[in-house]
Length: 344
Image (cartoon, rainbow, N blue to C red):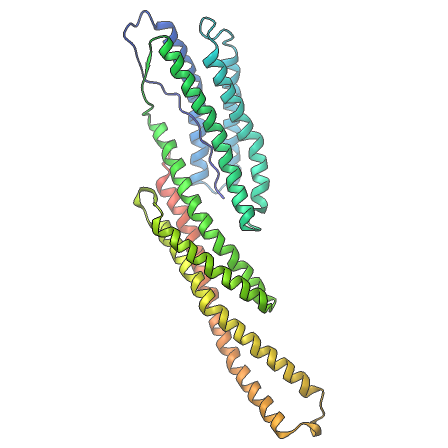
């Protein structure tokens, strides 16, 4: 899975009515803006690496660089012991934000990586992993909101007007967060049927008729649920490429449940009948077998031989289609992120 952490951009557009009167507080805000701008740019490099690189080493290097940037900025802000003329509220809130951001990106990241390693073992694990990842963003965003509020309080106190951040970097971060969120929602729909399908294939491999039936029913249910969700899903920037890829997976999974599974069950029951009949015949001597028994057994052998060919054909067909469908979703998912997350 792809991870991204939300940051705040401190590129401040400041206007004031009397430059001489508000020169010192403006300088104070500009100094903070300059220092935190380094964090914003490093955060963007990390986000961009996650979106456009499959090199885990490169991604982790940018994460560590981000942590180091936060630590360096923290030291400089801590050096402003009295803030602005003893007004330290905004500075203290900034330090709280930096502290929580460092913890979430550094310490919590390790926990998330550990969760990611087992996420694909069940849908519940995957959902828990994504919730944990999103919680990191939520905690950081809560501090961002507090920080923005304190910034406005400080600015109002000293008669400074702060414009909305309309920087290119700010736009990039906003876009990347929206793209990743859109991808995640579709991924969960995809993963639910994909994981259930893997359980179905395991049941087939083990000739477990009950498990085949249970997982087939679940696969049909989850496929229908997913298709219903897609009807109202709002694609990012009206780009349906990943929505359509998800729909293709769901339609195939539903077909697998309705067409493939019943034929698998029928073949396994026929094979089971053959094995039982063979066992009965093997337990009898050739002279004690009736003509009717021999004829019925030979008829069953012919039927099984015919169905073996049919079973192999349908198995190969669905295996090929399954692999192509899943691969198409993965390729489309990567292309969707690469297409919409801006490049440096």
